[in-house]
Image (spheres, rainbow, N blue to C red):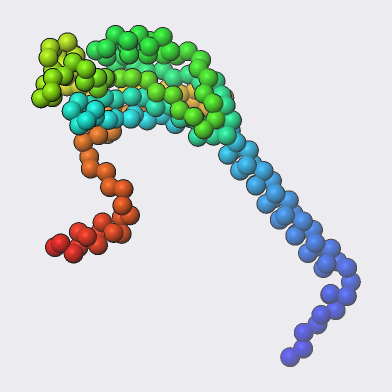
Length: 192
């Protein structure tokens, strides 16, 4: 069996091979430039941060984070039904003031907006409220809105998206493990 390599002697094969290789390299360079540009663009994520002050009383915040590499102006719009039922006047007034307005968010930073308060200054030493000043309105709000689907419309640059958040999804009563999962799994399997 004999293979004819005479086609390698003229420059047509090498010219074609070089052209294909150049086209592949140009495509890869273009793709990398697009990815780098996308990585630098503003990218705003919204979530809810939940916490408990010394495990006593839940508090919730909206957290807007720009995970992109570029600062930007952005707006967010929340349902008026949700904002108008927030029991704390300062939190309600703040959200009404910024709802649908342009705000500035630097790259790699976050802004927080209070939803429900975890102020324990009105609590006695036995973790009970001295008065119903905060407890009743907040409890009523959480009873009605813990499972409410909050549609948050975000707009920044050329991007517009709507995120759905539910306070219960971010409930802070869950146990958080800081150890590696493998070690936890080994401990659990050892005990059973």
